Image (cartoon, rainbow, N blue to C red; front, top):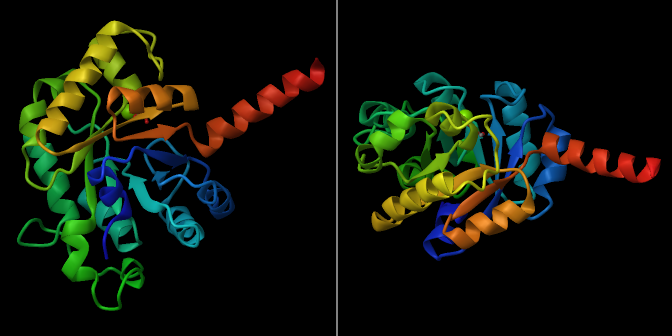
Length: 253
Ligand code: 3PY
Ligand code: MG
């Protein structure tokens, strides 16, 4: 089975990623029918646990976004469980060194590329019956997060790890690490945009993909135009709050 998201990026198509923080299959289903190319269940700062993540993968399946998850941390146990449950891409927070990137890749790939254990209990339902093991190492997207000064310093070493498909920027942790305070998701400061430009160049020189976390459609568009392959459009939670707040303000006149 191919990964539609990887195919889109290879073809040069910019994609929008949905972000699920609310531990509800219904929320996942409603988000999934909006037409975003991928949908990421957040087990780090989102309220999801393993079972709500599984239910969210089930709920989004009919609508076809590529199912992804953000790990709570760089830990192979939960990485394997989320892949077995059907995640076709993992985003891993706080990958700061080559060794940490190698550990993350090892958790996502079957031997000889990695050390993932075999047992795709739900993932095996996707694609041709019995084909999962043959294609998983090529299909699964392995996306370490670059969100510290240390990760910027080790960027080349992280990107050069075989099996790293690309990176995902955590704008607020990156700013905290760099001392650019207060942390703001959609900064326009030239210093930050210059870092983003350098990261885009480093990824694209190697044929790797790059995305980041955003809150608004306007910033997603700006980041796509800047060269990002994918960008996250807020979350189910932030979109709910922003929509409700705007309508409440309109109602109160
Ligand atoms: C950050 O801003 O650090 C993030 O991880 C966004 O998800
Ligand atoms: Mg972060």
